[in-house]
Length: 177
Figure 1 (cartoon, rainbow, N blue to C red):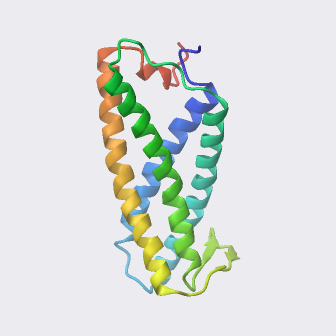
Figure 2 (cartoon, helix red, strand yellow; figure 1 turned 180 degrees about the vertical axis):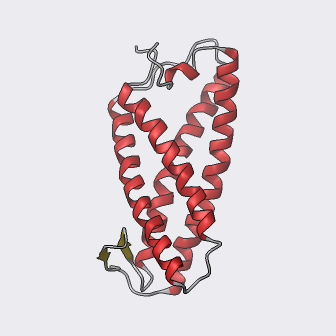
């Protein structure tokens, strides 16, 4: 069994991680723009558009992950740590899927829909329903908080493994060793 993830999985890991963190920062920044202003609409559509593209990359990442088995964890890793690692990775994938999906669904239950990169109007396919919008929008907001908390835990675990030099961090590293 390979000791590292496939190169495509490693590249997608770092690309999606970087884009998701930037998108989260963009979303929090967006909250500071006054509602019902041209700037809010413009930047909201950029956020929605990049979210759609990141969502597609997440689907590609999931496809690559399903096509290539993860390298085995070292036998020195305690069973509870292996279970925690597997569970946290599954939850990360779930949240990565829920986050763009809930944002997209919320957009489709509002009169605004998505104006892809402020050029191409993608009309909403749902009705302008404030209650349904609120459910998906709240799901979007909760998902981002949960994802960021899990990413923080993931980063701490990666740092711990990197400092221990137990080979786990090198499995996902882009370095060619």
